[in-house]
View 1 (cartoon, helix red, strand yellow):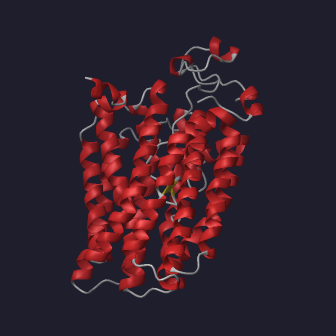
View 2: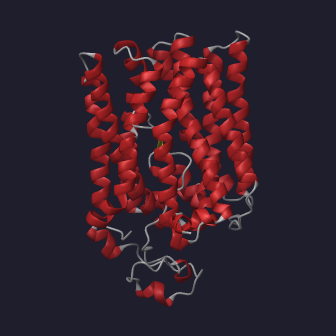
View 3: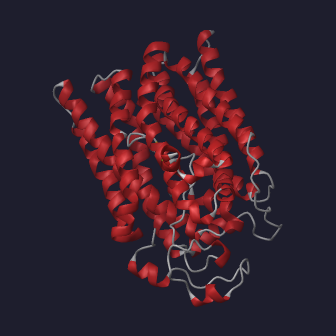
Length: 431
């Protein structure tokens, strides 16, 4: 009985437990692919720096080209869950073509490029649906707990996934290791098929529907600032990661297994960051947490090009960089994700998450600091104290402060007072 009481309340609910389990398994698979796909290019096909650059570009291009149209399309669909199942099955099918081609001695860089682009496009569509499904599954008063569980799963995937991926690459070769990620997509689709959440109604046809999300982001000062900060960090981190595997394997001489263990050990920092993020937000607020998290994420990466000397010293320096950077990025993830979910109206969630995904925590990294994408299969959660324009029926109740306009507006009235006046001045939201 005492053991059961320690299980988070959401995990005692079958629907959320199935959703969370599918996402957790899939996140581990993502880490395997993040190791196996570039290693297949380098170790099997002999890709050079320029070709690795093209591979990374094609992985990221769908987020730049398709977030906005996919977001607009998803907001007009009634059943996002079915779309997510279809994207899981599509990604599994694409990944399965790589080990088949390898066994038949037909694998080429062109096929790697095509699969990277296809999986990236389907991932963008999956994430456009995921934030809306998350909000439909979790009651407002449990957003914080749900966000902690998803972030905890992500940290565990960081910890276990690279090590598993490195071992699989070393034992099976990189293309065959991708079978494991394909299986996790099938598992995710299976768990999604077992849940039946009540999803919000699709957005009605309206003039400017396609660009409404982007226009809302550009009108909202806080989202503009977050967009600019995150975009700057990710732009340079993309370039950094493009050369990371090549640098570590060719220049530093680390094998796939040791590289995986270094990244997995560094992910302990992600667990620490996830555990401490709530306390950090409570202590210094949302604004301070964002600044601290961005600095903690980026500054430790300077250690990686400085790694030199005996192998134990090199591994130690890489471990320190991974550990500290992962701790920082989890603070950014929780703070920015909470801020976004609190700000974004339900009616345009996919459209807003679409244009903001390339540069905000809608795409928070899915790997330790060597991997650029911020987490793609999790939904950010709002702080416990919802901002003043959240209707009273969705008010969390953890923060006693509510605006008079909100208190006098009926639920669902759509009335929206000026956002976060006092909270924004103080640079904090209350978790």
